[in-house]
Image (cartoon, rainbow, N blue to C red; front, side):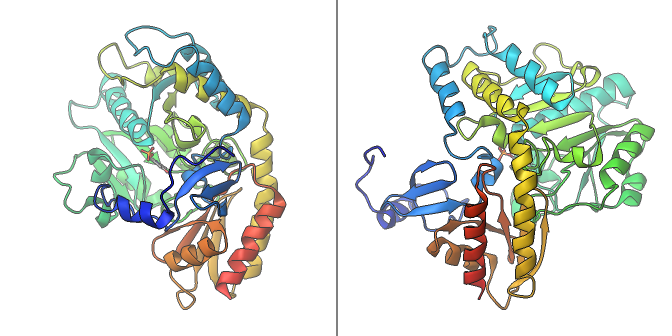
Length: 405
Ligand SMILES: *Cc1c(COP(=O)(O)O)cnc(C)c1O
């Protein structure tokens, strides 16, 4: 391992953040200094198994050799041009990402929220130019308990009061329906509807998996009503659920796909709107843009990510190890776990409130050398790197059993 870049202790660094870093997060008290694969190491050299993987931004683990090599190679040649000029990496990235997802065209952006914002703009433009919705009347139907990011427009259609309180006025044009309810969706979609925007699995809500048939039903409904189906796969996509995309579990191809997180390989922020040509083709020069979107470093890393997914190895691992994860969690039912939802290497685990809050379980797991994140009070989320071994996964499940006992 390389020499430490700081001589300050974890406790000192945590204290030092307090007055100078905005308090928009409440991190667990661990200060990570280096990482490799499924393991991170803190300032004092303690090692932890990473069972969160950067909210799925680290699907391939920390510093996957192929991704680090692609980044190094690109750093030595060209990092940024802006889209005022072409660069020699963007075409291949877009070609391969489109091929991987079965769609035609890519709009490269950086963060997930930017991909969502961009998708909303494209859907509205499509509604006015192709569908013929009267100017400024387009609506987008979304689901309750959604998480699509943190910008002003996105929190406008959040149902999480903490995410909204104090941030109005909000962007109009959104209708909120209960998730996993096709009848409510049917009632909300009308001739003004540009799109239905959904997470195929609601991640931040606690890994909420809709009933079998829901996503296929959304696909049928949106096709019949003549509006777009936008799948936000920023967290569910790119191998996490045992398929490249979570919508594949129901054989669904959306009109527009939003990707992010793992697309940047845990190295740089890379996101994308991927869609059919008749949808994304509505954008013309000057109507949308991003200084960093599609930069050669991002495109090189993104291409290396797509290359890893083309092998199918990570999807297969997620599916196979998902069986181990479900088995381990089933064994904890009634022993501190009151319920769980899991698909692939992704689970939301509801903790018996008698045993502790999600936060407390996270703190106890930290002391056992396992990193997780709580959500919604009593739920913890498990989403390890897809490179995790079955032994490491078993060890994490044993640690969970221990802290629940
Ligand atoms: C994380 C996430 C986003 C936002 O991504 P950022 O990169 O944090 O802006 C959007 N949608 C979903 C489903 C997410 O999980």
